[in-house]
Length: 147
Image 1 (cartoon, rainbow, N blue to C red):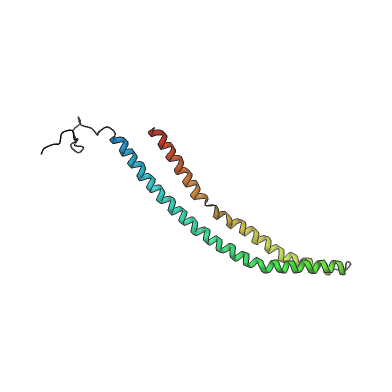
Image 2 (image 1 turned 60 degrees about the vertical axis):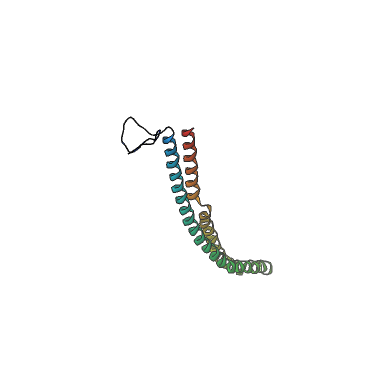
């Protein structure tokens, strides 16, 4: 078998012959690129999964908003009736009954508002941002070590 002058046989196992200069650097860049592709795929998968969670929570928020509309209308009607009764009959106890009616409408509104605030947290894509930040920091540290 004839050898080409200046070529290195990496599979020969000859201890006198090593990889060409720069081969380690090329291999390091290839390894980094493979890691970057893998991390990018993981990031895309994480973002897709968080997006599906956010869409599910968006549906819940829309549903809660639809439930809140009739309660807001009833609360407004109750406040209007209470103001009218407080002006018309200041010494009667009907206002206390209407106040209870309003409280029964407002308490669910508070619960709905709390639920919407809790579901909105999924819109932040917290895990995806943390993963992306860790990837950026890893890439920056890899760039510093190769310099």
